[in-house]
Structures are given as C-alpha cells and as structure tokens.
Length: 235
Image (tube, rainbow, N blue to C red; front, side, top):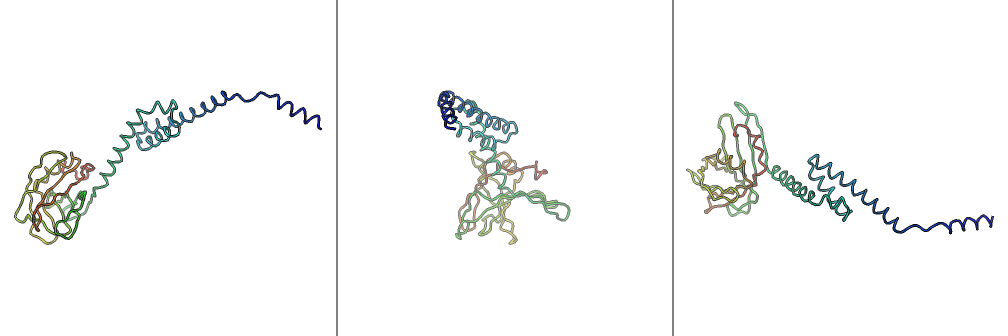
C-alpha cells in the first residue's frame, strides 16, 4: 500500500501545471459567449419593438460585460433604444392622464374625454384646487369643451375671453361663457372644434381664465396622450 500511494503521488507531481494563459483565454471565451447570449436577447427585444426589455438587456450587458465585443457592438444602438424606451414610457404616462367615459342617455350615447390640469391652482383663496378640461359629445346638446372647478367660480357670466397657449406658440384669445346654473362650476370654451384640434397635435395647452375673486389663473394640461378615436365624431 505505501508503494502504491507513493506512485500515485509521484504521478500527480509529474503532471504539468495548468497554463495561466490558457485559463485566462478560457475565461475570456466564456465571458464573450455569455455576452453574446445577452446580445441575442437584446436583438430579439428590438425585433419585437419591446424597447423597455431591450433597454434592460442592454443595460445588463454593458454593466456586466464591459469591454466585450458584444457590449461594444450594441453601444450606439443601445442609446437609440434607451431614447425609444423613454419616449414609450412618457407616452404611457400622458395617455394615462386622460379619462374616457361612455354613458347611455336619451337619444343615444354621451362620450367624453377629461383631463386634470398639471398643477392645482387657488381660484378662491381656499387653497389649490383641481381644474378639469372636458370634451363632450352629447346626442342632443352636441359637442362642447369646458373647464370645471371644484371650488370658487369663473368670472365669465355673459361671456369672456380666455387665452390659450399651445406649447411654445403665442397665446390666442378664445370666446368662453359661464352658464347661469348652480349644477356645476363650469365654463364653456365656445370654439370647441378649434380647441380639440389644438389638443390633438400639442404636447401641452395652457389656458388662462378669469375668476370671480378677481384676476386670472392659468392651468396647464399635458394633452399629448389624447386618444382622439375615443370621440370619433370630432375627427
């Protein structure tokens, strides 16, 4: 037994030591292979136009395999994918700002699209309040666009002008009116068709309106996510 053990130890001792360079090359090859697998997932997500997933795969590839051929290859494309992912995320955010309703009424169906202002404003001294912009299509009353307050009041009984600014354009005056009713604190913007067309093509719309306590207030609406097909008769 001692002779067998000695022979075994001698055989092990005589084996060549691992080549460090070969080991390094093997590790590098394995690393490149793993990077290529991630790059293939990146490419597949792009083919599917899933920009969020493509961005995630690209982020992981660049972070975990920096300097790899695959990471170097996708750098420029990853920047483009990142921009598309951010744009898609912003589109989802602005689309979610809108609320659409369909309600059966005498004579047919009432459709509406509503959005809250980006920031609340103080319209009567009681603190910031939400201001909604609503587009409505009613079978009897026709089409209308109007602002709605939860508190305070508009100074527009008998008619007034509001200033409407689209993105970075110059303000334009539009006719408005406050109906003499207590059912809702609402003010109609009379040229609803023009306002709708502005909203369809804009990123933001600012509306300056007079309030009963004096002066004017301005609200901004992020309208870019409007789905105009929800009110098909307006298009």
